Length: 499
Image 1 (tube, rainbow, N blue to C red):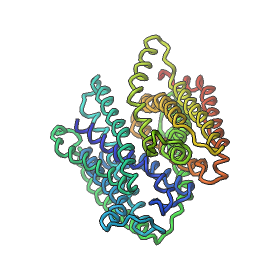
Image 2: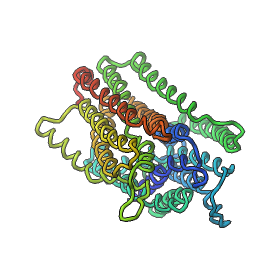
Image 3: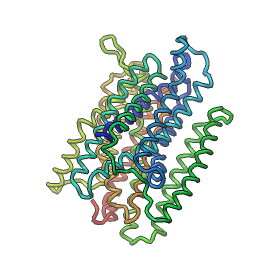
Image 4: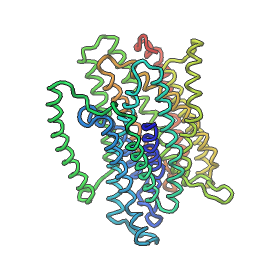
């Protein structure tokens, strides 16, 4: 219960802010936004969502070696809340001084608090997100059937927070976007309060870092010194960025980050295959992870358009008026979580039933289904963009159907990928392979932001080009699904006994 509600409120804070993020960046300054162009906003969005997944790797490592799981969750939650409140500062200032008129230009507080807030949320999520899941795993003995049930309940907490947050924060944001960010932070505070009040239920789980030998204790002392030094350097860098002394080109940073992630991931996988001392069968399995890494990044680069490109489409080109009331744009961000809550049990039962009938598709085939459903969703949006290009507003049903198809794609690919990596990883490489897998999600999120900057219809020329851009996404995604289908037999052979 403690971990369920902590995660629910953390996801409330994340998805509440995510529903507003790109809308806030692209909204005109006089309307209370930052007035960024779509390309800049998309790059920043991609860097942010990439960072959330990327920092889960060092966050888990620090918990294992320095803080312990429970303290990492606590510290991470505090940092997340501070980040949201930092983003809310300009709105709180306006509320205190009673200023409600439109702004003609941005102040240092507007931009600096925004970027510092994003950095803090990324750092905090990196500490909290991987380690709260690790505590859930510790609650049940190895081999217990209750572990899967416990994670299923925990997963419902994630989606419950993801469903409620966009509705609540978008409603408040209708008055002031900054206060919408503040409500997201308040949710994290609620999570921290109940985490501390009910924390006795977690006694004996994740209390201490993994240090057993004298050598490990000595290493931990050195690690504390190194971590403190890195923290000081990081604080100085954040301070420099906060003052605006060094100008930031988000698009260039995003492009370079994508290259770095790809080089690191494939360089490491290549090193493991060539010099990891693996048998041929294990080398083949690592090769499968490397191949599926590409298709995973492809999927998430399309799926994560939900918070960027599709969010802007809902804002700019969707008829959101019902009985004279304009539905806040962020409400559409709740649809995916609602569909997950409804259909996740169905998909889990479907795979079990097909397995009993000896008809369960292989993991590469499930990946193929996920990519095809993603492409089909964008094919639906192709027709919606045709309506928008004609100068009319599209019905909400286009987005709803797209989110439904994308949810089916997520359920076909996301849990399958996580499970498959645990099966394919050689002995002694389980955690590292899972870390590499999350790099594919980070890379996909980064590309999602870059795509959003090009296909969002921010100009008249962009509106006219949207149908062709969406169809190009369809061709790319469906084409990758076809390639994966053709590789299916080869991959099955490389996987050996793994399905």
